[in-house]
Length: 391
Image (cartoon, rainbow, N blue to C red; front, side, top):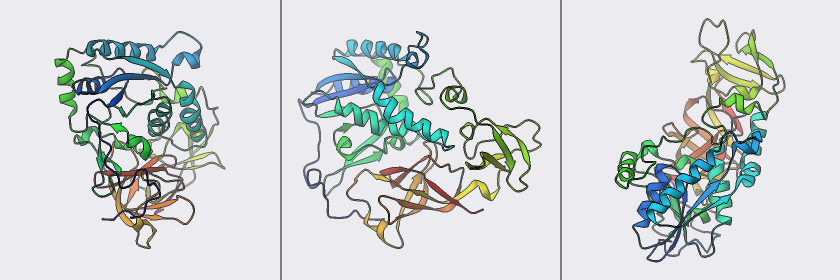
């Protein structure tokens, strides 16, 4: 186990009392229309807080289509208002669709165009919910609460906020929250930290919420429920056909419509294949995709590099990272995966880190987000810029 550096540049956040809500605190709850944020609002309404709700409009299919087909945000906004009326708390909407387009969607499109695999949901929390929304908080707001399954603790010595996994590990969302700035985490509340999803629904039913049985939202918010991902992305990224090659023989097995149509580790859906093959590599110069059998060494990565790793405690990365042996941690490169053990070393340029797996890991794609943990403590995240394999 490693220890944090003892000297901190951020005197305002270091060595002071933990920032904990008290009677009369002005709390704003971010609501989406779903059951998690609705129960979050109910739990807060039972406290002696000055409580109000806010709904973010981040995306509207009418913005891209120019028609009235698909008014998802309006349906969500109506659900939020119905719950708030039942709880007798005020609510308002803030339009952050421009910020989302510029700070999340456009950068993601550029990464897809390059053939890499971004994760806009991680960026959305750091750039929008705990970024742009914080810039639009009503004056005097003490805390922003969300329906995320995560927990906030405070370091026992310096009292700085720590992002921790939720008690319900099957629903833990710290992966998606890993880009949150410390200043925002300091003012964040996660009332669902110790409540399992099944109990959340029970609370919603007992409260008579109309959305108690509402399905969970899945996938990227801007793709929508009824569109295939490649169909949606095809509206923004031009097709660029190229060969699909067998990695050992260089034999052409078919064609792709663009590097962005496949991600590393994905099954190669090509007509006439006698065996299962998976995407192992991409060559931007040749505009080629290479495929391999399921246990081929080319599918495994031993080391990843993130050139701009973002530590939640930005001024105090783990001191052991600067030593030759590095420090021991665990990493997730996808939300739904078990964290795996790694060694982390700080590189000599900027905030770059090198993360070495104990055992080579399968299906690691450039552009994905690597999130580091020390036990249940989420330390931060970075985009995977380089990978080194065993092939």
